[in-house]
Length: 409
Image (tube, rainbow, N blue to C red):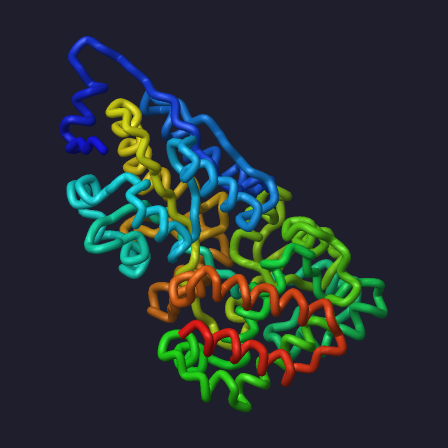
């Protein structure tokens, strides 16, 4: 396949006296109100370069969108850019030579000097070459609480997971759903992952997920995590919504006490005009172990074998990582920026909490960065079954979980 240097690509669309623009289709799964408002900031910034963002949103979340994206790329119908999560989701596509190498532009613009934490760029790197641009840090381990629901119930807003569990009877007496949980499979897995660090602690999480310590995975401290997950299962027993943002809506309207969800929930609160610390409360690490996992989103650029479009792809990569776009996008998305050199004085109380945790270095890699996609899928399937099966004991679920992890070390 042809290769082009950055200079040659730019020259191909920047000849003197010529003003040529390129259309790039960008596929992603950001379709909720807050997500759409955020991605529109990227589109606006790219359009300002004279090129044209062609939006290719795919409804249904990442589990629905990723197979479509992969099928198009491998089937010879690539888009200009596509979203994946940080980690190994696009590794096989990179290894197959289907993704554009961004190393030259990353070195030109000194990405390693400002991307924080460095593990974000490491996740984009294969054999020393950079193939994606990280655009945010999304931490899924937050408990979002409705101040209105607790005011209606006549009790204080909880400050940690134990207080939240204890508040359930009062919420139910006031006609509130204690815990809103959507029926998309990944939501059960997200809730379990949040509980794992909150209840088990950082050391246990690292021992299991980084050191692959299966004795710890099968031990009594991890059993406490599964017992807490069973508590969450009971609190969410009457939750009937499907999508994550529908569950968030139950919280922001005061119909539910809380939701375990990533910081992207802030986008929904923001677009509804809700104010952090006034209308809702956020507890990172469920108010027990405050930390940030370095999950989030990155964009890859499939090879198009077209110098003009490849130049536009490189320009889009530069736009996405620019200071201006990082501020505009992340303030609306509810996520944290991947740059450590920008001013976020406009951040709300919850984003400031996240920034403080990040600055303190209380970070762990996301599950996508430490386990293969196949392992992640198997664990997700188990969590869906566990949350839908009240008769599955915490001990039984733990045993099956250890079997999955042990088989994939």
